[in-house]
Amino acid sequence: MQQKTGFARSSIFLVFLALTACGGGGSNPPGSTPSAPSPPTNVTAAAGNAQVTIRWDSVSGASSYDLYRATAAGVTKANYASLPGGTKRENVASPLVQTSLTNGTAYHFVVTALNSGGESAESSEVSATPSGGAGGTSPGTLDATFDGDGKVTTPIGSGADEIHALALQADGKIVVAGYAWNGSNDDFALARYNTNGTLDTTFGAGGKVVTPIGASNDQANALALQADGKMVVAGYSASGFGGSPGLNWDFALARYNTNGTLDTAFGTGGKVVTAISGCNLASCGDDVAHAVAIQSDGKIVAAGYYTDVATPLVWHIALVRYNTNGTLDTAFGSGGKVTTAVRDEDIAHAVAIQPDGKIVVAGESASLGDYSDFALVRYNANGTLDTTFGTGGKVTTANAGQDIAFALKLQQVGTETKIVVAGGTASATFLIEPAQFTLARYNANGTLDTAFGTGGKTITPIGGKDTSQAIALQADGKIVAAGYSAVSLGPDFDFAVARYNANGSQDTTFGSSGKVTTSFGTDDDRAFAVAVQADGKIVAAGYSGSSSAAGTRNFVLARYLP
Image (cartoon, rainbow, N blue to C red):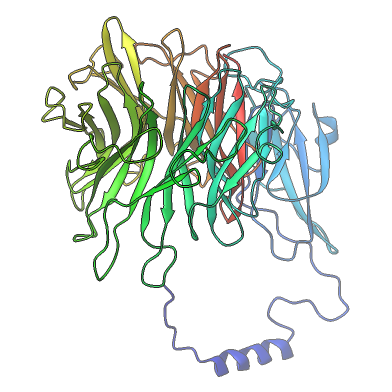
């Protein structure tokens, strides 16, 4: 909020005239040569895979910048050429990505600012050591057979494009789903890639599909593959209210044939929109699907939340089950829908179907004005709460501050189906938002599995402000979690992947002590989905863009060696 100073515009104008008359205000006399600028400040270096990203604040009066680099400390513009690995880059801009670096080698950098008056002194020296670059063979290294460097970037629409879900086909092709900006609002968006990371041009238009569901924002959050290879995507569509097209969100699903065309045997033209909350005279409730799963009989379960239209500050878990043709399954809950209150603010972020047909959701729950806890709910096949699970079918787990479960997988341990969830938990620094990767494993009855981690939980700090958004299980029982991590406490986020042994301990054979971070050369790179291929390679997907310009986001994927 701006403070009132009581300093009138006329006063400012008079001061400006006085400064101009006296040659003040920091300007140089007409015809004189300007002074060299000040050195750049707030210089940072963030290590990636075979690369380092250097950033600095712009300097007033500077027209360009030079970078000096060496593999020994004490770099200056005078001595860089005599130091090991000494090199100079002229006319560079922040952020600057230095690529083709040697993993495990420390690189030292200084930056200078220039104008017609000369070159500034050096900035403070920064250093970083890249690790896990493509072309290596160790677990967690980027896979150089995937688009050459282990990373793929794909623009879809004309603005912000985000991947939020990923699935692997039986033939190894990679399908991703999310949303793309069409110039006015968001639409469902999918892309399919060949195993080498190139777009599969037999899918949609050049490997991409964009689908408007309604007339306003449509965002896809989840993706599931049917046994016949068809793709079910779930999220929400805004149908509008009171003249505002972006209001009144409803569950939205679309089903696609294997070539990317809409399956017209599903819903209306391949699309289904389901309202749960309804409207009153003042407003409509919002209903958002965050997860989707396919039952063994082909029925489709979507999970998320709905807003209680009578009490807008309250929202609860919502499930909807559809028949294979997209109609509501009236044998499930009430007319195909189930809503569940755990506390006041409850959201399902993930769903899974157990081998016995029971349905498990994971997410978050909070009382009004309080922090969230991990929340799990289990339902019988007909939508009723499974009272053999937790307390009346519900389980909450507190860690510290804000705790949110974003992902869920079922893990068979002996004869028991255990439940593994992943998300984020707060740290002492960031109590109001997740700041560390957090996994928890539950027994079939909802109690924490004390054979996993510490008391059933494992918490992993990576960069300082970290959240796990997805998990995948390897054939050997190891667990892969993916999300994002802030460099130096943010706002610079990178992809983050961590691997755990079956008992919840960190797998130190993976990356650096069990962790890998990956930059795509921007300051906002976040993974929301992960999967393990049949050959053990790990694919993570999300978006890459600028934190200061949301319209620059693109679909991105990275593949790592196992």
